[in-house]
Length: 181
Image 1 (cartoon, rainbow, N blue to C red):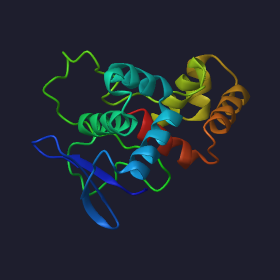
Image 2: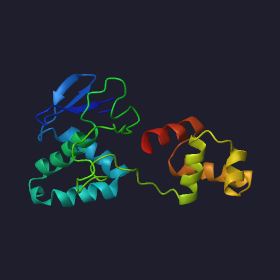
Image 3: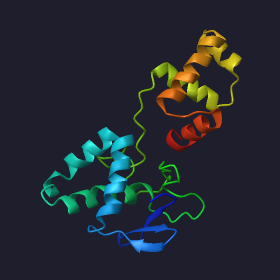
Image 4: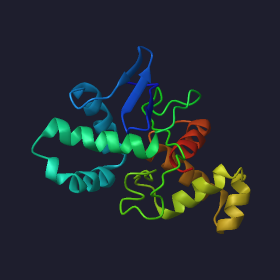
């Protein structure tokens, strides 16, 4: 299920491309839909809850209900066929596309279906440190800007890596690029 590209055509039909080729995603593709939904619930639980509420009328037909959630997410975030960056990478991370949607700015579900922000347990201060790290600020520079000690900044960085289950600075910056941009 990893290294997968999703896209939709002008008829709103959803497709996926992986190592085995291109296939249309249908409501009876239970393993694929369940896998995607599980990854979504892990990273975006409140978004999935909002989608379930939005599609509640279909909830009695579970396969169709889950298909509607996953296919809508794909149409809102991965509609372009981008051969360079997979929409779902080898680590199970989503790479949301800045896809043009004619409903941007007027859609009642904007920010829920389209480009959802990751839900993390990071504090506001940790998010601030992470953002400054991403801006190529040095640890000393971040400490000065935030009026904190270098040791405190290093502790924040270690806490961020622990909370996100990351081990290195490149992994941390890659996570930020994937999830916060």
